[in-house]
Length: 317
Ligand code: FAD
Image (cartoon, rainbow, N blue to C red; front, side, top):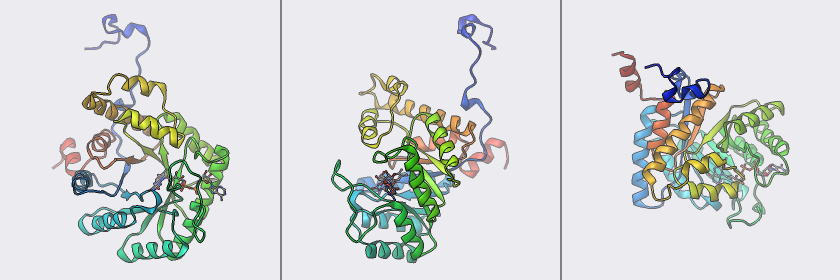
């Protein structure tokens, strides 16, 4: 039924709106997933079940975070090495400067390279005590750009770095922060992955500004599907990320309804990604929180599917 001229369906209120998800299915999207190293046997099982679910859609790489203050050094290493041993995935190990001397950084990096890891997400990290000021190790690195230089001296790693569409909380201005991002690229990083954000325009304006200041590498949007809205509000306060009123409205009244929150999380993130795609974005990095279902659904909406599913849908054999 064509409802456009049927006032019973509310169409008489204004022109039809084109949904981003109604555009032709993308066929050019590349995705990557972030996981964190598990603490317990239970969380280890959840992580590996998620990896198995997401592996068939062939992410470009999967990254494993480095806990605050280097607290997951062994677990990050163990998770990355297991990915190499047991899957066809390309792992990327996060590494921070926190609490490490230059020698330790060199040793960690060399052991990754010897183990076959070729991609590092190089970060400064934060002070181990939440809220206290950042202080570099007396014989360590003060900024991620210095870490990038050091890693490149150990071996020819592929290096990704962090970017902040709403500026890093400690930066004096967005332009100053972008200039420091450029230092990381000039030092040898070939990709920036952004902090999560909710308004598509915030990201698009940031990319425009970064391009104007000479950042030429891919700036991959970090996508966080929100299931626990209250936690995200707290986390966003600490990280200088704006939580728009429309997002608060969508989750309002759902504190006791996790299943509904999940449905909303998937639809918000899918719409965000398709709107980004409509604006030329072809690479997406998902903060999975070690869960596969939302990332899997959003990837499906982005046309990123296991090869067999894709063939079946197109009627190929
Ligand atoms: P930097 O690029 O060094 O920047 C930090 C601050 O210093 C910024 O304000 C910048 O403007 C300023 N600055 C940079 N260079 C200079 C300079 N030469 N002189 C003066 N000021 C300078 N944290 C973890 O602990 N583990 C993780 O696994 C992890 N993964 C992350 C992944 C992504 C994609 C993102 C976006 C963040 C991640 N973080 C992680 C958080 C990150 O460690 C913090 O945001 C940290 O505060 C900054 O790290 P950075 O690498 O951006 O630092």
